Image (cartoon, rainbow, N blue to C red):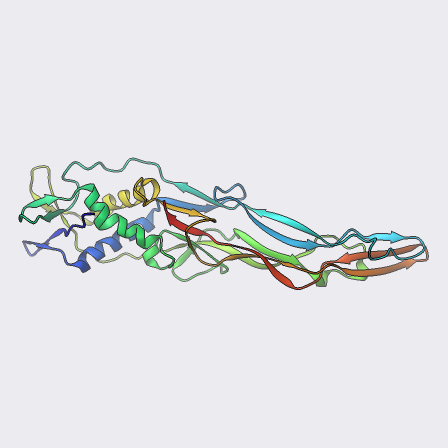
Length: 308
């Protein structure tokens, strides 16, 4: 590992950057990533590449009827479990070829022998790119994670942008108040939504930084413009996040990594059935079992971020 100290122009003098200056360059790298993430998530109708999540709830049993008496509880269908599938998060990793290292592409630093030398791509990874990725994949959801994603139960979160007003997961349960004896035969599935979960992306924050110096083709030492440095470091942080082969590729899943935002809970009523009767006439006795019980947790899903 070779973390370098870039040089900067201090009123015409080449000086080593301070640790704070290098940190500012890492922060700018994160900001550039937030403008165009290399590993991007979106909300789709179905078939998202992250796979499926499952919401379950009880529904009423099928009603029964008798011509001379009510069907017994044992002869009446029990409430059943229905399952709904959510495959709404899709992951895409950018595929492109970034600017090649010519030997003078990257900032210069002062060697132990007091010589001016260009950083290698590995130096740039160790000094800027990998520290930026480490910040991006943490469990926090601040501007230091700009361009990465998390789950919230809110449509609006300060410091973030919602990806879609369509929930990526909904926890539903049987609406027990919707079932009445007077309505037998009731519709089997009468749900209520308990919680919706939405995908958000962290906003970035532009930061003040001192541009480093580089060697031109004619071996002059020149300061990067903000535009040229921003474009170059954005290419490489995007490429690292999307295509890194040295363990710094950003990846999202439901199975491994650091939790990002709210857990998406599937809850369900745990009752064995609320047996109800309805008298229509001397030849029509009806019965049906409705969902009942206390809500219990069935599963909790998390959006997770990791380096691979």
